[in-house]
Length: 337
Image 1 (cartoon, rainbow, N blue to C red):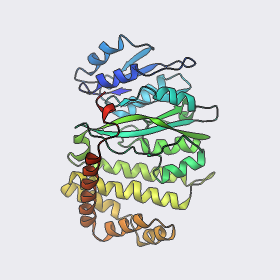
Image 2 (cartoon, one colour):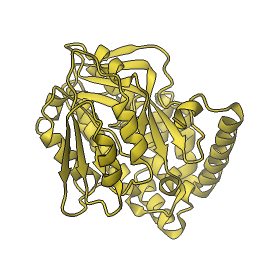
Image 3 (cartoon, rainbow, N blue to C red):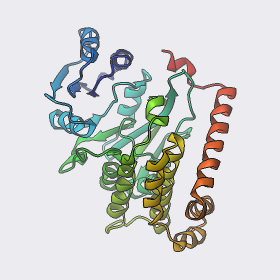
Image 4 (cartoon, rainbow, N blue to C red):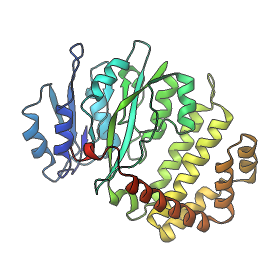
């Protein structure tokens, strides 16, 4: 668990981890990497960890090195068969570790649970995977799920066999570092399991969603292109439709939508122009050929009228958030646990 200036949230995170039900046949240890916090994060954590039922190691960086390096530091110290990355402002349901352990069969290299976004006002969004039954995919099938964004690139909702990280690390200094790493892990996996029911609850901080725009959103696009390069090579080359969908939906459209959410001004306009240069009408024809109708329409609009695409996206997002609040949050009780 990387930690950096999360004094307000880390107490809830630690309490949730300590409340996990640990099966009798497995051993658990917690590795905390303090990435040079300047607030009382570690004091809050330390007070709770005195009651930890499992071993705890605390590693410290002398200066702030960022999430990727913090994860690499923790990964290098991890000696178990599986690793699980938990963010220090999120929390989990008590039965999640049991579900992970139950699904981690000898040939299953990655176990995934659903991720539920929780807003700072206590409201929750829709579960990201929206699956209601346990599922097991072969490695190549899981890659296709990833390319069509039915499996997301987040590390936090995944239990991952430690051996998959051999010769692999998170790219230092890059945002959205999960994207390329997740593509490589899925490509190496023999089988990937999904467990329905338990959930990882992911805090959506308003400042990180609608705050000032940063051109570093292009790191996301770089990660998407990197993933496409990895997954387009033999053996087990991913499908042309999947690669096209991922490049356009997870890459181009996500960058434009991030600029729209934050109303990025001149910086946002310049970033949108950078990704628009990679759009060609042949991409639209390819989407039509693969029956990716919504992606084709979106790409056409971004290519011809990106301002209108941003307006439509903001309107659709507003209506979706209002609908979620009106219907109530399935996980609201958990969000206040």
